[in-house]
Amino acid sequence: MEKPPPKKKLRKRYEAFFAPFGRYLAKTRISPNMISIMSVCVSILSCIAYASGRNPVVGRSVGLLFGTILLGCSSLLDMLDGSLARAKGIAGHFGALIDRTLDRVSEFFFLLGIMAGGYVYPEWVFFCFEGMILASYVRSTAEKRGGLSMDSTTGIFERKEKLTVLSIGCLLQILIYEGTLGIGILWTGFFEFGILALIVLMIGLISNISAFQRLLFARRFHASSGEKKT
Image (cartoon, rainbow, N blue to C red):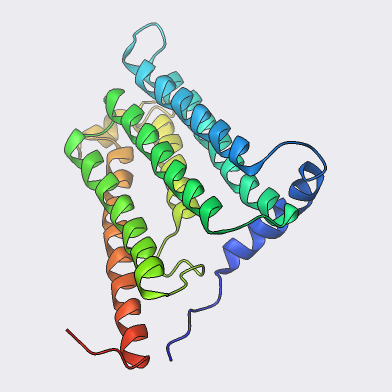
């Protein structure tokens, strides 16, 4: 029977890094769901910060910077809730369902803010969000209906990696396209859009590829378990 591949090294590393924080919080009354809700609240603030880039008083670079800082804070909280759940020994299916649901909500606000701030074409933002939703949907459906564990996060990128790349794209947008390094004019001589738009498009492509990879993995799993092909 097809076995899930081992967890990625990056996932192992950040889980090990946050484990002590989870054990510390396990001594308090703070619950993983409380941290998940805090993560969503911070993502809403990130959305507002990104969108404020349209305000000439704030400025595009400042809006991007604060939006990205808040995006990072929200991502850290998201990693912390899993560590807390494992430390308290309450990591389960329902907790994972809430976590994944709120993750999609946070991703929506990140991308909504970037679109509202006028940094990326709306069509590209929709394509990116579609890919992120599709990859998550395939994983959840395979686990629910097929009994297949995808805790190893089969696919090119998992959520943390996508948000890390998105954050890097925002910082590069500030340094290069917005002219902080004085080379924004050179960039616009070749492209009509910023580097963040390219990053968003790339994440959309990678997310759709990851969804396809998960479909193939599920197909191999069911074929090796003797399930009839349809």
